[in-house]
Structures are given as C-alpha cells and as structure tokens.
Amino acid sequence: MGQISNHKLQITNISRYRLVLPYIGLPIIVAALLFVRLTRTEPFNLLLYELIIVFGYAAAILDLKTKRIPNSIVLAMFAAWVFTMTPMLFVDTGAAVALLKDSALGLAIGGGLFLLVYMISRKGLGGGDVKFMAVTGLYLGFGGILPVMFCGTVLAAITGLALIMLKKIGRKDAMPLAPFLYMGILITVFLS
Image 1 (cartoon, rainbow, N blue to C red):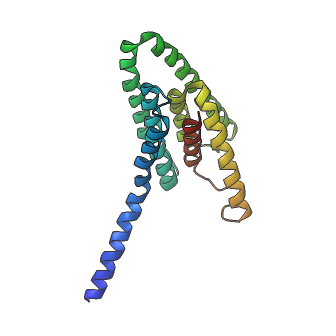
Image 2: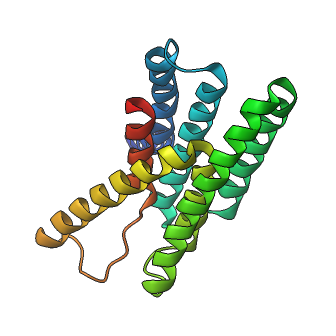
Image 3: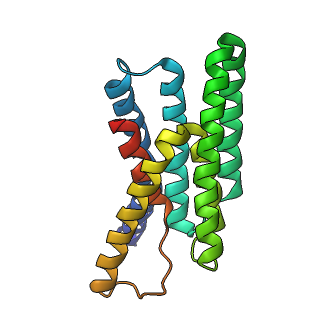
C-alpha cells in the first residue's frame, strides 16, 4: 500500500512540474534580452521590448494550451502600453509624439492586415490573433510589426506543411499561430 501512495505522489510531482515548466523560460528570455540589448537600446524601448516579450510569451502558451488568445491578455498588453507611454509624454513630449505616431501606424498595419486575412479566410485566422497583432504593433511600431508578421507566418507555414506531410494534422486542422508570432517577436527584438 505504501508503494502505491509513493507512486501517486511521484506522478503528482511530475504533473506539477509540467504545469510550471513552460513559465520557467520567460525569465531566461528576459534576462537574455537585458544582456544583449542593454548597451544598444534606450531604456524606454528596452522596457517596451521586455513587456512585449512577457505578454507574447503568455499569449503563446495560452494559445498552445487552449487554441485561443483571451481578451484579458490583449487588454493587459494595451493597459501596460498606456501606463508605459503616459510618463513618456511628460518626460520627453517630442519623442513621445513621434513614438505615438509610429505605434499608431504599427497598430494599423498589424491589426489591419490580420483583420483583412481574417475576413478573407472566413475565420481561418482567429480573432485573438488579429487583436494580438494590433497591440503588438503598438509596442514595435511600423518598423517592427512587418518583420514579426513575416517571420511568424513563414515559420507557421513551414511547420504546418511539415506536419501535413508527416500526417500529424490534416489540411483543415487548426494550428495555434501565437507561438509562431512570438518567435517572430523574438527574432525582431533580438536582431533589430
């Protein structure tokens, strides 16, 4: 009887680690960003990069687990951006206005292109992906949102084709897009 209880305890501990394991990578990614970018990036932009990495990671994990990006994540992303931008308006108004214009263009491009694909594909793309890319455009602006969309969709297409060829998924099966968009965010942030 004692061996059975011990075995159940070990399985329970393994299950806990499976729940926590995806979230361990986030501090490592943020620390790497700080190390790589600290000398080359303005502190304000570094903060925006860190926030998009944290929120993008959460969206990717949730999309993998539930195949949707909750509105609460998108709203939290937007609120964090507003709370980050507000002090900037008082510290350096000229730079903040220029950044706001770039962010608005990023929002329009990211949200607009994904909304167009959403409408054309008859919901082949999720509404959460549209909102996620719109708010990501706020963080990365015009110069950052296009590489994210390109890298993310190319990685998703290659992975999807490989999974179809390996007969792991069918042509009509849904595949979460946020993890690939997150890879695009990482590539853009680290290489820009």
